[in-house]
Length: 242
Image (tube, rainbow, N blue to C red; front, side, top):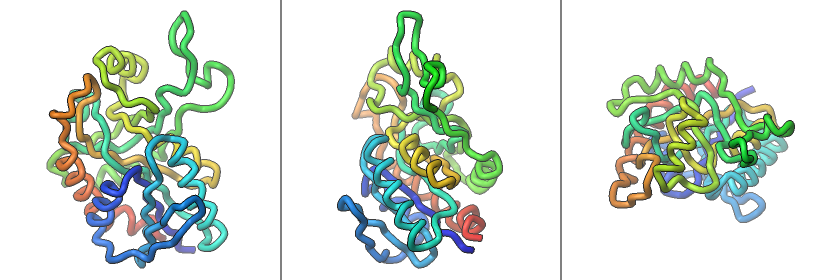
């Protein structure tokens, strides 16, 4: 059976960059419950604007997965895509980060002895590993990126980091992380319910740390996102349809 691919972004500008990179024509808009609209394309790639934050995007992704499981035989791959903050120097502005794991960085508890994850508390999970075979194919496909590609954990936060102190705390708890965004873990939770592999792909628009909007390079990051999906659309995604 040939499966569809679901790409989930937070906002329309990210979805537009993804669709442009894949060279997709005009999509067939498919209304879903909750006011969601799935962009369905003939090459079996669907793009969904799922909303900002892990809760909104988990609900949106779950809705799309439920529809596909009933109507189309389900999805073969889910991708959380968009722009993100990058931890320096691992992920410079304009570069791309591919998740080796998708981590809920603030799902746990603060204690007098420090932060505890939900695993350490004895319930739940705060990380989804990404299949190595999948990330190997993606990284190989993105080798042509002039801005570079980093394979590392991507953090999901409900509050974007805006101070040096918070950035240092996250870096200490997650020393190998390369980026932070707000949606990956929500997408991964929904995909896990349906047993579908998931990966997060982020283009870096700013450094994680003190909030300085003048230093953000959103246009540059959206351009990198578009080029990333140009490369994936003719390589990894072709394989994933089989």
